[in-house]
Length: 465
Ligand code: FAD
Ligand code: NAI
Image 1 (cartoon, helix red, strand yellow):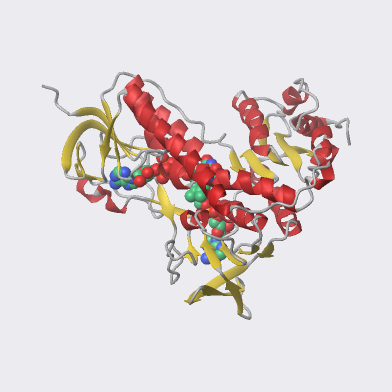
Image 2 (cartoon, protein in one colour):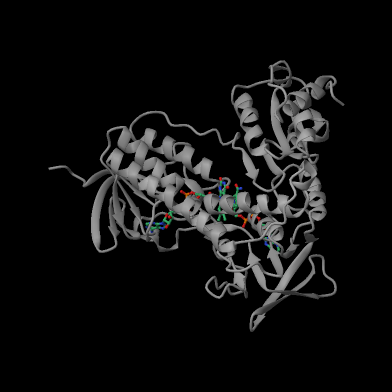
């Protein structure tokens, strides 16, 4: 009889966990995946990447019809919002994709253990009322919203909400206050602004989108202001009170100063996310978390406890679905005795607003801290496709090592920046120089030509500016 019920037990079926489970099964390992949610796919498919993109895509059409962008191309329409249908197509997208993971589990013979898991010991895990054993356990329990002290989130009430509540609002708020000018705040703030809400973003720091390149952050503020968002940068929230169906958000300058009250029908709390480790029983296996509540691992994703591995939002690094997925593949390969690697220096990040904001590698600020750099920039206004499509906002910036010309970072603001950034990531993965990109033939007319021209600007001159 086998020593363990499974070779691999994955806890959590988000993009990290479901991918790890499928890859482990593909490699011939007997695999189960514990998931407490009613559907597979984790935060990303159920309440994150997918439903937010469904709302962003639909609201972008509405905005284009309402704000004259379509009329400028000879399409005159006065849009009427049917929010019920917009929500229904969002739910359909989620249902289709989460159901798809269930199909993939069956196809690859991954057993879904329904229920929340807690450790009994390093190889024994209780899932619901069942206890199972596994030679290897992969923790992929993801993250949840970071609470703001003193502010109670109640998605059912729909007044003070997190991202999950903000995806489900039954009507367009007249006034919405977003606490936190990061990725969630700008994406979901954009959805409701496009559908007619007056949106005010309160951000503690003096710029939006921490972690992105300085030029990109400055440009983001200009673009969102132009679109009609009110930005209160360098501002902290000191309290939120709810009376009836209205909320009052009290804010004051982060550096100190006079308080101000902002009235809102909906307040979105989006100040970051924290790892889900509290209810795993980690103390039973002697595994501690760091100061940020994350589980530390080595390069192979092994924790300090033998046979226990961790991936995705629960470990350090950007909280992104594609990072979690790549770690899922790598950890399964490492468990199977292969060499699974993730290059954490080259993980693209994208904000799916209009335009999109995307980057990979170092910011100019971080690159300069390491040594001399050369920077090439090209405006989207001079890109023929963007100009033809009435998409003037944005630029591409290529940062290269001054001595070796190796590309260290690429930043794009463009309608399709999320798609454009893939070529930059691939070039950097292959160790490309800016000259390599500049001498690569790019199809015309495409937005991607702006990457080639920004690369040309690193050492010489682009043609079109
Ligand atoms: P998760 O997806 O969080 O999955 C963890 C799963 O584990 C959950 O289903 C949970 O129920 C389960 N679980 C937890 N504890 C237990 C337990 N004890 N037992 C059993 N199961 C358990 N990232 C992008 O890259 N692109 C985007 O466009 C994007 N958009 C986002 C939009 C929003 C609104 C949000 C909130 C996030 C978004 N993200 C996006 C981030 C992305 O969703 C996460 O980085 C990703 O889901 C992390 O994957 P994961 O597998 O680590 O964890
Ligand atoms: P975030 O870290 O992107 O932004 C949080 C923002 O809130 C920061 O700008 C921070 O300075 C600010 N903040 C923190 N405390 C504050 C306070 N008290 N008052 C005012 N501002 C405050 O976190 P967010 O937007 O909640 O997203 C969480 C995670 O989800 C991110 O790490 C992101 O990677 C992931 N995500 C990714 C998406 C994508 O890839 N397109 C989309 C949505 C989420």
